[in-house]
Length: 371
Ligand SMILES: [Zn+2]
Image 1 (cartoon, protein in one colour):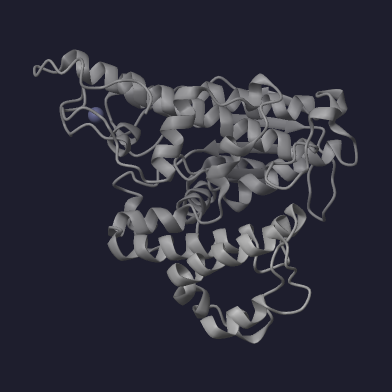
Image 2: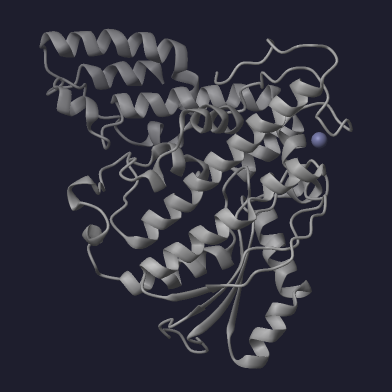
């Protein structure tokens, strides 16, 4: 393969400029190290790899297989293969849960408004979790006294004050309602009794939306919404996560449960309303079909409009590598995720502070904010 590869490099049109020479040299170093990985890719062997980059434009050309982008792809494939060999079962499961990349939305979006701005603590906490960088929490018990302190424990902790913040009932409900209102819908939230259980929040943020456009057959202008944010690494959800082969398994299960268990589904059916059970996984941010459809349906009210009523259009990007916030759907999806991650990380920090306060070991200095 390497011989074949070098033949490509002396092809006509490869150029004899200084940059072409440098590119050849770098390619040699690269193929010596990663040739094997490259070779695994059938298309490398069956097609001409490309031309030696001789201009900066060549280097960025995504169709040229001898480009920085192509090489970065090979390196990441190699590193991934190495990682998979030593990853634990939980890490592999988490990798699958995150596979659709939704977790990247909050860290990739352009912070054009406060609603889509991730705070510093949230950036580091979220990246650490999703990239599976070991935690630096103090080695003490959670304030509940029932488990060692860890992110996954905090997110499923049953101690009242911790659990209540984890479920962030009002905040997420309010944001969905704000999205609906800004898309021209009438949103009503009903005060509900908050009941807390260790296995997830049972008094979910329920909203009644009216004035919805009817697009598909069976659509109603009134929708009842029950939003839920399951914790995939909660002991009750972990079996679902561990046996999943696709991302979003825990969100999907949570939505199905809403349809099965909740009275709203029946109330809605009886009144000719629509019911949406909408779930987003608290760690991977993967969303269920109900969540996806709900946001699409709300955002459809802004269909075809430029988003410049809310945001200066010049800040709405659609370039590669940036998330497009040009549509109501993209913007509000980002806002929901950002809000969510900000709050989740805040709750974890607070739970750590509570644990440190109560610890007898006096490890007050062991934990510091951030990375
Ligand atoms: Zn606890």
